[in-house]
Amino acid sequence: MGNNLTEEINSRKTFAIISHPDAGKTTLTEKLLYFGGAIREAGSIKGKKSSKHATSDWMEIEKQRGISVTSSVMEFQYNDHHINILDTPGHEDFSEDTYRTLTAADSATMLIDAAKGVEAQTEKLFKVCSMRGIPIFTFINKLDRQGRDPFELMEEMENLLGIRSYPMNWPIGMGMDFHGIFDRQTNRLEIYNPTNPSHVEIKETTGPEDPILDELIEPSLLEQFREEIELLDVAGDPYDEDRIINGELTPVFFGSAISNFGVQNFLEHFLRLAPAPVGRESDEGYIHPDRQEFSGFVFKIQANMNPKHRDRIAFLRITSGKYSQAMHVNHVRIGKSMRLAQPTQFLAQDRNIIQEAYAGDIIGLYDPGTFRIGDTLVEKSNFQFAEMPHFSPEHFAVISVKDAMKHKSFEKGLQQLTEEGAVQLFHTFNRYPEQQIIGVVGVLQFEVLEYRLKNEYHADIRLERLPFSIARWVDGENSELEQFKKRQKNLTLDRDGRIVALFDNEFQMRTAQDKYPELTFYENSFLK
Ligand code: GDP
Image (cartoon, rainbow, N blue to C red; front, side, top):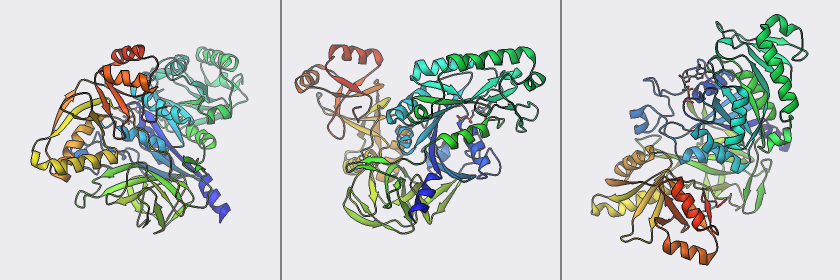
């Protein structure tokens, strides 16, 4: 039983793809699922650009816009691996959910458009991953088009993200001249065939100097390729799996997701290198995934999966042990025992009722309103996993209810939605009258908030947008903090009474930092 549990857990990989919109995340995900046989035909994941709606678009607002507001999980098998991909919403639907989903991942794949390099959203998501120290793999996409010099892209990753890279394979040419990729570990050449890209011809070689390459690649490109490989060997970082696992070195793969080229090469190395499910810290120490006892934490709550029943689904990352059907668990925060009836798992597009699931898996629990983000469920013990951090919102608005008679249900709704983590709520405290300020990571959350307060709590709201774009949790020595509280404008308190300063822009924030060098300005509520 013990061995079986360990085997099941070790066959799992749970990861997220982080990228800026349009880098090709949907395309790459489709190809990965395709390898696992989870979808028959690529192009069916989400209907964002077509009229078809994928089943992840549960909410009305999603249907109206044809986008996926909240992230979902896709699961597939490849060889003996059981893979869970956490989808991180990216477009207008970028929200705190996107960040929080990353807390459920054990590794991340950073997807970069070769022509665009590291973009704003990639940078934000990268920061959250590096805060957790998880391994980060990089896929540089769209090699079938002319992009930037690969060395320049690696340098940009180092400058903007502070991460060193190790190219696992190296492209030969690009765009019109794209000839393929050369795997530096196996010395295998994968030849790109522009007229039939998914047909990959593979040549085993003895290394970059192998004369067989002279027969396959035109001299000028080959010369350039050999020089580049030499430069990498001499001046690049050495291959180091420990640094990869610690998130200090990112293995880089080149390819073209749309042509399904380089995807399998990536997948196979990824499955070899990416960690099996790792445990999490709790108030009783580190909880190891192999622990027999089932435990997990809620990282996301998605409302209105079924508008008729107005139910919610709480997404739980299993941290240790095994879930078996209808088991009883402790809901530690409220100190009650409950039965986990009919959790669902997410196999590509379908929601399936599951019989069993293991550490590393994500299950969806029916939530009549009993869960909050960060809640711990555990079989027998009473430990709780570390709290979930909040991240700096980027859009702010003063919120009020239009009809004062609806005040009570408005407050109730606001509290519920804050607990779910859909929005953050701040209170002004050095200003009269006191105001409630809503902060969101993505503007679409304002619409979601308005919609849900109206539909679920019958409260029409007024939102008055504010010019701020940055929030910082401020901490420091008491006397300094007191000075700050007296003099600084635009201060608020978060739900837990921590001081949060709001700024219009970076410049304003830096001015405050210069003025109060003794204080620390944190980007998240974890103060780290
Ligand atoms: P997402 O916004 O990151 O999910 O990106 P999509 O997967 O929707 O891709 C954005 C656009 O880039 C689409 O038009 C894709 O067809 C295109 N695209 C994705 N991968 C590639 C690629 O490897 N090469 C080229 N040329 N285009 C690609």
